[in-house]
Amino acid sequence: QGALMKFEVKRTFLDRAIGYISPRAELNRVQSRTQLKMLERSFEGASISRRTSNWTTSGSDQNAEIASGIAYLRARSRDLVRNNPYAKRAVGSIQANVVGSGIIPQTFLPRTSRAFDTVEKLWIDWGDTTACHSEERLDFYGLQALAARTIAESGSILIRRRRRRASDGLPLPFQLQFMEPDHLDTTRDSLYPDKNGHMIIQGIEYDSRGRRVAYWLYPEHPGSQLSWKSIQSVRVPASEILHIFRLERCGQADGIPWGAPCIIRLRDLDEFEDAHLV
Image (cartoon, rainbow, N blue to C red; front, side, top):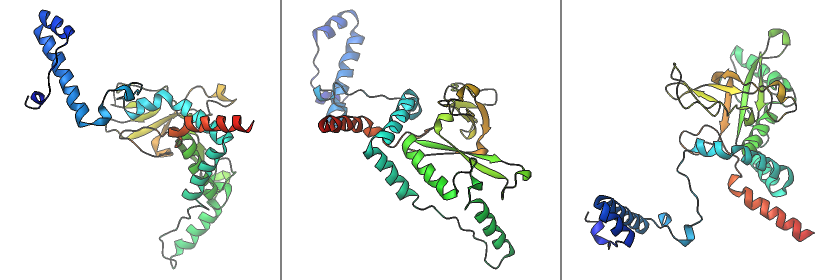
């Protein structure tokens, strides 16, 4: 009340008219307006003026914001990387600086131990060859570069462990499948927990303690020509999935493309340069 006394309380004609019918309603209006003035004086960024009249903001959490526009962000980010030299160079620089020629694993076994040579040979046969990749196109270092590029361009990446039979003749009985985040079935979004206390947020299933227990994934990319075969998502235990993205807000379920803040500006710059060149 002492703080409110510092401000001059102005009663408008509408306030007086409302007060004639309901004094309490008039009091609430005047108090709310006075508190708003206090907030404006304390924080310039909270002021309501001509400069902020077209500034639309939201109080929703990160997952609600992501769900409302993530498909557009990813599509536009990928289009810029394909066609805009600045965006393509930016993603390439991130890939080169994060991974370089590849992060080399190292065993902590003593060199004199019998297992050291076995582990070294297994890694050379599996990680230094394309045997580690489910498509058998890249070695482990190439996969690292692909992961860094995908995370910057699309916001996140899904890596699934694919278990193989001994008869497949691989050095280790599993391979790594790299998938874009579009494989997540974001239509599976339950607001209320089931009988086990599990909830699903944007295709990610959480237990009652908030731990990720499963991912609902499309077997094929939903934008693929083969997507008609995989319109039904399947449940994959979280122990088989690595979901890698940059965590920016508490409770964030998925990542956003790193170029999201400058998508519109890059697009405008591209059109300006094109028009100037023509």
